[in-house]
Image 1 (tube, rainbow, N blue to C red):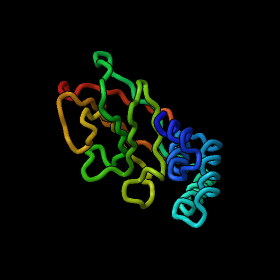
Image 2 (cartoon, one colour):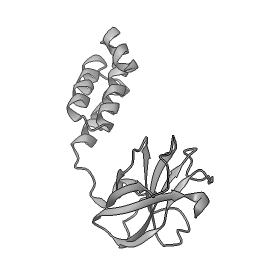
Image 3 (cartoon, one colour):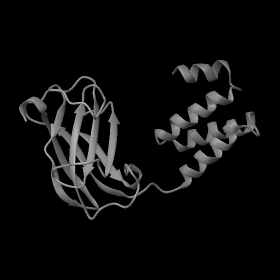
Image 4 (cartoon, one colour):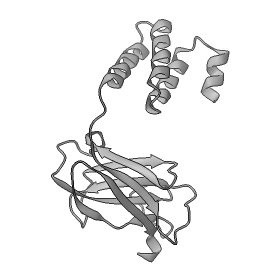
Length: 178
């Protein structure tokens, strides 16, 4: 709303149109994003914003990467709805999960059950998608996946899972009870 107000008051503010386009593109509103990007190109020819706008337009025109694994994350029977925190879904190379995840998704403001999808765009260090992965979901109350707290929620590790499976269900439990 603040950015919309700014653009209402300053309709020729190219940077405001750029940020509005980014937000619309991330929300999947490609038509609105294109309108704001066209406005950037009109208002700021020859600037870095035009180059960034053209790059964003090119990315929007590419098909989304294929989903390698997907499904939903729900709360366990005795788990209350977490207030705050960040939902993370990680694809691991093994059931023990040593080392960095193969891929990871971050879902701010998730409502449960929450849908998730991981694909090539979520690979943490590039490379290819392995033949099989193990999945774990976590709600980290401070939003940092590297920290652990009894208030965090975590699912059991599920797998092995081959690529293309999109109907998985991960169940979150209290870390204090695991």
